[in-house]
Length: 291
Picture (cartoon, rainbow, N blue to C red):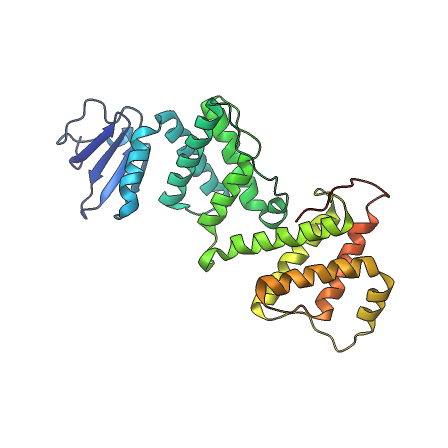
């Protein structure tokens, strides 16, 4: 069976090939490199995964990773990535596959040592990025099943962040920055109310989405404005506790973005905070204030 000459055999399951354009191509498949000589042709039927190796400083590290990570991990991650690409309807790229292989191998090594990597639950992710979160949860379940060992539930969070890095086209990590700012606003409101918010409630989902859109309006300079201040003044005096929390959010936004929220934006924050507040019974879910 014909094929291009092998450039290098990394191990029994990973080989490097030079394609017709002179680019290095990584070929993965169980036993694909066993007994293979540099001039032997490769049976295409044995190739399970292929991607082009980018030139640059990171290429050597990627090859070392592919050579050292056990093939069952490479296979499990590759199949999980294929599933995520089908779910999301787009290619995720070589960099994403490599990043997830590296991450999963690191997690497995830590688990073997009895060490669990701490992570926040980040419930905002399910609201702001439901497709990516669902795809990440499917990936974690697929990898755990393939390797026949459980993964910590927070792996859905880690894999969602990897997916966001791969699927969001905003420059300079805009999506990640926006997410961190949403988180900070949510924490500010929780601290002001002195509670853990119910992350499964509809009011919580509405609030998180509102904060996201608020911050996006701020960036695009399309903040809500009104010449009628009567509603704002009414809310300010009728709901002083919620107004105080909304003011803390306004102060944070000013410090983080050097932009000022309009009274109209603060008014809607007050409305959302009041709605969240009305769902909380006296003394329920009390929590200490954190910075």
